[in-house]
Image (cartoon, rainbow over the protein chains, first blue to last red):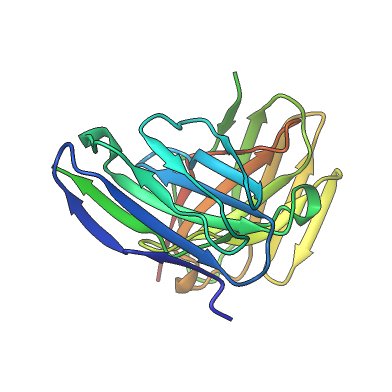
Length: 114
Length: 109
């Protein structure tokens, strides 16, 4: 099983550029999440989805956008990149919340905006 | 506001026991998770507590006291591969995970 696959693993962007971080899971999980992780800080939720066609904002959604057209895919779009978006991004999935809320993470995407 | 506190860094010796504490103040409580994260890698699930008491899983145990807003992760027979960050996260009343900043555990020979 591949689990959660994220691409790219590393990317350098110039200020104002746009890009999409891809995320695919093959576990048929309904719930998918995008987090960012900054040094010395806890994981911050950007967006999440409880199923195909349904997305919702997390704690830090500004500057990002998502879509969920299929159960498997949950891409994260960065529009007009800013230095504050330099971070490590993790996509995760879970079969549900509560006891089944164990998250399965992708390997992460390290983004630098210069 | 919601807050989770963990020590920033701890050092322990190979073969010893270490306890990593986590205190939380959240809007509601639906469970507490511990994750392990090696440097440059993704977090991986270690344990889940929703009732008070101790949950043991091999060399790792996790304890929860809901009345005190307190949990700890106990690692026994430390190995060099246990060098990692340990993340505490609480599932709040909206079923959102609130994450602590993590405790970096350094194991010395």
